[in-house]
Image (cartoon, rainbow, N blue to C red; front, side, top):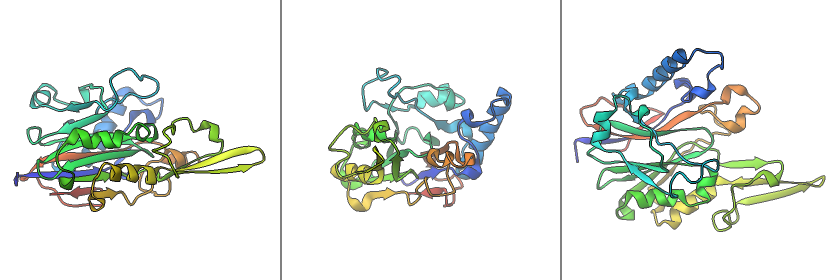
Length: 274
């Protein structure tokens, strides 16, 4: 559809915190909500949208593993948009969320720090899927499942990966409990033993990119973010937060389908794909 734009975005630290858990503990709840709306609007206003137009799924993890079957995709509907004035109020448990041309002028997103958010786009059907793909999810092939949920010919699919930590270091290798799939992490772990303690560095970038290539996405259609959150000042980062608390937090990584009459310009944090 020529009257529809696909817009990929990643908020920066300048937009502010995208998770209320990182506001001061003594801050009033109403003030936290006001600030969150303000920060989201600073981002969404660049797409001529409202902060109320952002839908975020609730993803299961090792603490609640039985919420749904791995790789579950929820497709947002026009009825959902009509029902909820603010899509943040709509709680859906799913790994993956999908938008179609029927659900336009809406964004799907996930708050992130060092974990990758995978955004898949079918340039022929104008459908998009998104999933938060931290290490434990890469381990169970969620990036591949995000492509499966989108559907279509691989040649028509582009994949955009948000800023994330390219590699992670564990001073005690026994604390790396989520990288259990030997095929996923083959040649991605580098061990070092000193003073009787084994450390490990794990190459997340390599494992994620390789998984997308194994899913037969053309190499030229894979766009890995050039920003390594463990080194870049633009984004929040858990790993950097250990040394500098100002990096503790979450940015918002997402994608939107927007009518062509909306005023949108390419900016460092926003990319109009078509």
